[in-house]
Image 1 (cartoon, helix red, strand yellow):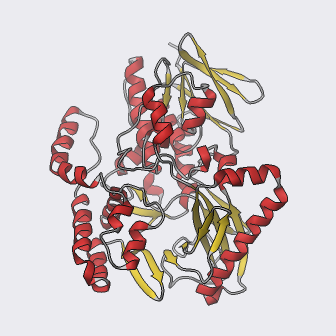
Image 2 (tube, rainbow, N blue to C red):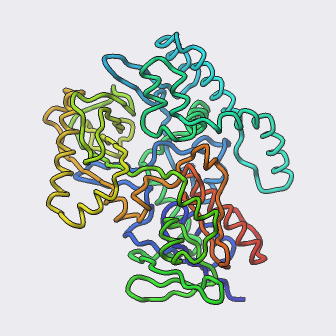
Length: 491
């Protein structure tokens, strides 16, 4: 019998993982990616010998035998990666004071109690939560017995998860008196669920959130390699304008330029808003879906300033939050008096010997300004990027005198860059922000009134991140197999 054909819109991590699982299920698959390479937001780029990372901070599942490790092995050979586990997650500086956020919860607790004894109760509350969550296991398994064991293991954590799921980072920050601890919890994504940082540090303290040397490109390359080895196809430069529906069933897609491709099922791993309201013209929605897109908070967009510096930063932390001498204007509605810098002194593949790639990151919700500026006044758009780069260079050179006069490369990505290369709604850095309102429950992967159509990725999984692409692809493929009466094969 002829294999059924699946078209997958989007070649990011969700699309690639879904492609791997669907190939194992016996589908003929073709991924349609509008860019010239796979990865989507999980990407990096090279400028004059320096590589600038856009996505990966850590990979949950880096430790053999720990949570997510087995699932990653289903889609690529994770053992081919070399992971870096640092002692330090972040260093925070302000007004001459300095505090370290260690990846190990015991060291973190000692450091914070030493620097902020007046916040002992809140510090111990946080470190106690991290220790507890470090014992939480997130993989339910596939068999009924495995799932029952998982549910039994979850029960002791339910009161804790219920209590803290109602807290945001900003609200927990109010428990602290020390200004640096307030900065750590309250600045930036203050609406983010407090559980997000607690789980992150729990994975780190377990050494299960290592950074893969080589960053996003090596992960994406290995998954793409696995997908192609299974016979999967990818078409680049293929922008989907419309999902074709016949008799209430997704029957294929229409590409920009007019080419029509037919399929038995269509899976969108693309932007959720564009999928539902543009490609499907908003015809297949419910009150719940409309409410989600009207009320859920998105991750903001961002301006990323990447610098290639002919200096050695080996003694600096991998992530530094500091205060520049001068407030930096990002756009007419966004000014920042803090500077978050990733210092890639731990990845030798990102810069020539003795040199370092640095990335400064600024969130903004003024994405429409950047998109309109690029469309309507390219000269001013480029001038604004140059201005921001110059201000960041000045701040970096003031903080790191060894960098003075040694910046060899400056590259600026804006919300317009994100929209142009990924199509992500409003230039969002991920998808839905995990908040008390959204929770962590996966959103519907199907739409009312439409058969043979499925969604995967960050727009059905609040909190985003690389695991959301893997897990939604895995879960949705299981559902597809059930719908079509096919056996499920993870390996």
